[in-house]
Image (cartoon, rainbow over all chains, first blue to last red; front, side):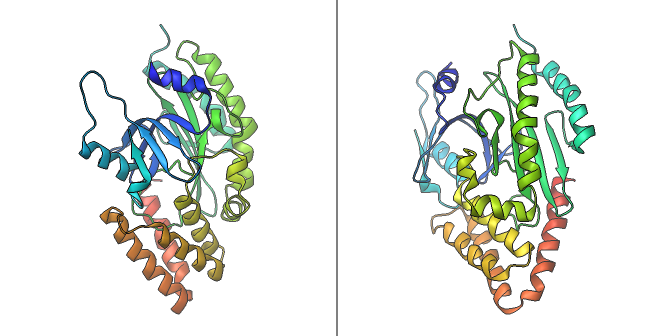
Length: 82
Length: 220
């Protein structure tokens, strides 16, 4: 699995399977929370979220916005979703 | 085939019984354990059963802060596998006993002492203002939460001047493109900033109301 490969890298700036709600990191299963596959914390305070898709599925704008608001609603443009 | 998640949750609950008894944590669920200090700071132990394994986070959350969303927040903290150390984030479902033993060891070694040293209003001020979060490797403790917890902890301990400074810094973190609920929160912070300036005697009442509301929302 991709997450296992990321975990094996041992990079402290990369985390897998975290859940966010309105900018708060919350416990898995929290109502309304958004679970992200991989999140990278960049040195300049921005973050990059890798939202994995299988087959022909694509990343929609509504999903990008949903992730941005979940991770950093104070400054959504600081969150890049790939 | 490893232990299934339901079985693992039971196992966690059993293993945490002793921790709860000795250190006054209360199970909020099978995977979340909470302790509230006299100055209304929440200490959190939170297990996460993911797709590739399980892990455990620890976090500190002051309840005297004005919140836009009332949840148990893991922002000031981290996974024990990435807390003062760097190793694989997840423990395997194939060896749950081994994983839980390692997690409990890390909890004793790095988690509980951190709660003791920094899990109070004064401790939070010390931790954030001295940049300790970098030393502890808390990469997900973002500047928004640092400023929020620092500002409200300063106000809670009666330091209106420094508290006001960080409330203003916090306001600056909320950009024009913020979500609507954050813009409402910004207004609330601006009102607080005015109160600190013009009616500082009312601040403690505002923080006490926040404590009551947060406790009620979190059902603790």
